[in-house]
Amino acid sequence: MPVSKERFAQGLTADEFQARMTRNQERYEANLAAAAAIITDDDRRAFGARPLSIVAIAEDWCTDVIHFLPVVVALTREVPSINLRIFLRDENPDLIDQYLNQGKYRSIPVFVLYDADWNELGHFIERPAAMTEAMARESRRFAMEHPELPGINRSYENMPEETRNAVRANSSRWRWETMDQWNRVFLDELRAIVEGNASAEAAGE
Image (cartoon, rainbow, N blue to C red; front, top):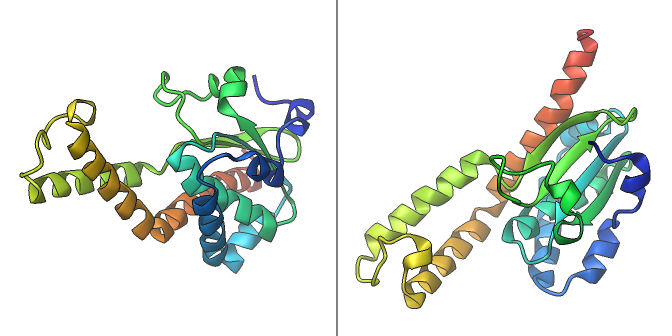
């Protein structure tokens, strides 16, 4: 069942979430500043056209949370009509289990969007699909360029620790070097949820 208004009010504000962070705070703050720079006047109009509430399910240890939650936080600072509350995944299993990735994974972040009448407009899980595909291509490229790494063609879990560390470092480098690109894709996907519902309402659907 959807999050009630009363349950929504129990969630953390963005400032409360940040104050509770025990890891990745420096990266989170850097991403917050970068995210603010990509928000356009069109974004402000699209997201500010009507009241909007966003439930975020997150944890500070998750790289995708550190990547994409700052985009939503930056958006709420630019658009005062957006209300955001953040729920910690591990403390709210009943919430995350409503939004399982592929029906089985407790992937985060999750963002659930509600209109003023508390109708769910849609939700977003983890990261853009195009980014997942691009990450896989980058991993294949890295493996081809570094055949000297032992076990480089094994699954990540079965690689020797040295190779796993090298793969992880490359993935991190790639992610943050392309961050602005994927922030834009992510924001456009959230906009599509909001604008798609607005178009349906206008058409009387």
